[in-house]
Length: 113
Image (cartoon, rainbow, N blue to C red; front, side, top):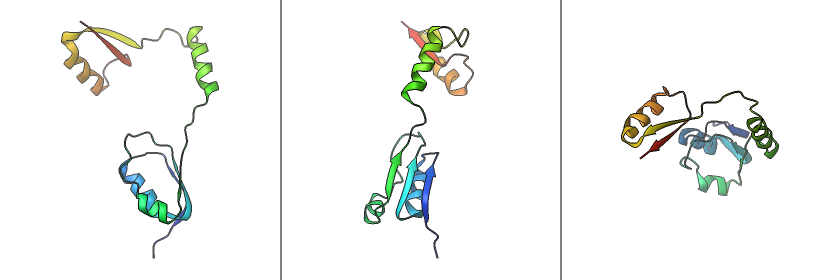
C-alpha cells in the first residue's frame, strides 16, 4: 500500500522531485515548490487536477530584502566586489568554459568587441 502525504516541500525542483511530489501527494494535499531548476517536467497535471492537489510556489526573498541589499551596495557595505570581468569577444569560448568550471572570480563577464 502506498503512503500519501498531506504536505510536500520540493526544495530541488527537478523533474524527478516534481514527479515524486505528484505521485506521493494525498488527495487534497499541498505541494510547495521552492526549487528553482528550470522547466515544468515531472508534474502529473492529470493527477493534480483529479485529486484536487494544490501546487504553490514560494520565494524566500522579500522586496525589503532587495531594498536592503541595494542600499548596502550603494554604501559599499560589502566592500569591493569584483562582480564583472571584461574580456575580448575573441576569448568568448574560453570565458564560458572558465565560468562553467567555476574558476572565474567574477560572477559576470562582459565580452567586448
